[in-house]
Image (tube, rainbow, N blue to C red; front, side, top):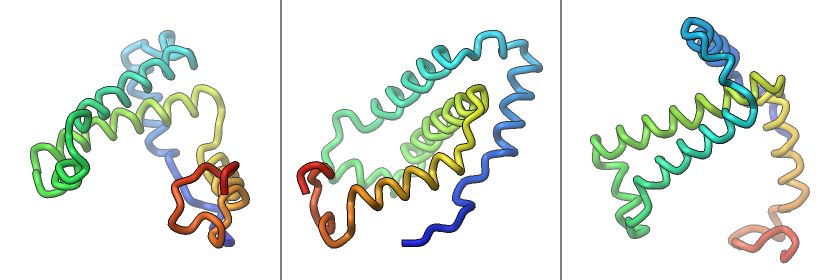
Length: 123
């Protein structure tokens, strides 16, 4: 599969997050370690929204505006910390996504992986 070279463009968001941190003098706290820990915390908060739901209940959240709004907020927090971490580390998320997608296509060829939930080493 031939992927377009521009899959992700977070330049504007990265700039906005940098400005937000700078205005508050928070860049001093934005080490890669701290940002990854914050990212993990936000993923945990997202996880909490689904933790005790059944598969069916989790799918029903799409139809619940209040619950969907909470999910959207947590996804935004995850995105913010992900983008900020990449920015601080000088990682181009588009390049990383393009490279990783190509690697996944090699590891999970469609003819072998279709309909399977097995890890690439098991297919």
